[in-house]
Image (cartoon, rainbow, N blue to C red; front, top):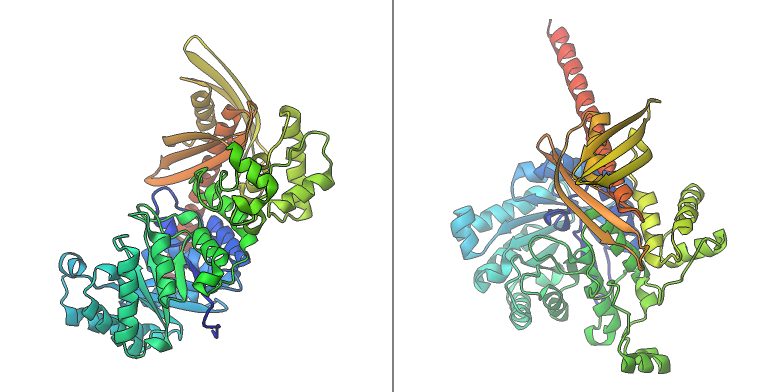
Length: 527
């Protein structure tokens, strides 16, 4: 890839490092939705996963490689033949692909994790890069925990893998330990002391344990890095990763200072941020830079006065630049299709006719329940329509009563095979009763591990988003739904999980039948 020297590539690892954040795991269809959104955003590289980690990860990487065009699709691998081969096979259908190999180099990792000497580290790193080169010409190497590695040894490792054929060298601050001035010195040292470093792309990958992931990444850019590895909303292990939207808008807003630019369509930042938040169940703090609800809100009188005179008095970016509307357009039950469609577009969503018709119907139904609809309401409707998990069961009706310490729920579910089943149950509250009724109907008894409620819009009649986390057969599942009725919202979220469990069971049964049939065929052939 030939790029101008002032172009900074954006390497998104939301699907790999971001998904490793506790509670942020995604299903394969969800990963594909995020990957397509990242392609529309304009990221240069999508790290789709760690193919050798599990069959599910391999399938997800392979699905992204087959179905997402535009960005380079990347897979992570340790420096061993099995990992690298798995990554190569998962990526083989991609329009453009990259294998990303890594090996820890710091003294603490050498002693306590790898039990390897320095010369063994160099040999293993070189061998990993050479194996990867047999499958692919685009090879990235990461010396894990680089920021805590002795500078002289780090330079030796980097020089060796460049000579072996690595085309991108990524310098990770794996545990978020470094500080901007120190990190600057590290990059300057490598550029001065590593032969051939001018022929590769220098990359940076920072974690946020001390709250400096974005600052450290930007200092790397100042000192020659031309790829930044980051995630949407900064999700990732422990305190998270460098936030994509923050580093992109810092470079865009201060382009003259950094003398650099990215290829990101910044107007897609807000909708992609909301999409990832919805799928992972990780709410965005109101004061989150760039995409938080308060990022462009002004309450202090002196600020409001300045804004009325000229927006630049208190805004260094325009909200439109990140795809965020300046103010909420209040819609109601008298609003027409045209006004609603325009608002959906202004919020950054594109729906086909069938999707729009469904969302508009839900919008009108919601408008009958609420006095005013805000942007958060509309986002919730669109995201629910885009991401609703199709399954065998749909909710036909829900009736609950409570009082005297107990609650009753009667639930009617319709199955895709044509059945409609209605049963009741009692519980400690209406939500508990509704969950038990669903379990009676479906025959699936899941263990509720966590239940969350949060408001997605404003006012006394605001919609509530329910998020449920359940365990079933040693696996964890997550479901979410939005409604003005929190009992209905919770019930639909739980039903989404039940659908996923039933679909998973059917898939397992189908695989077992296929394996049995294959075994029979093999036995017959042997006879």
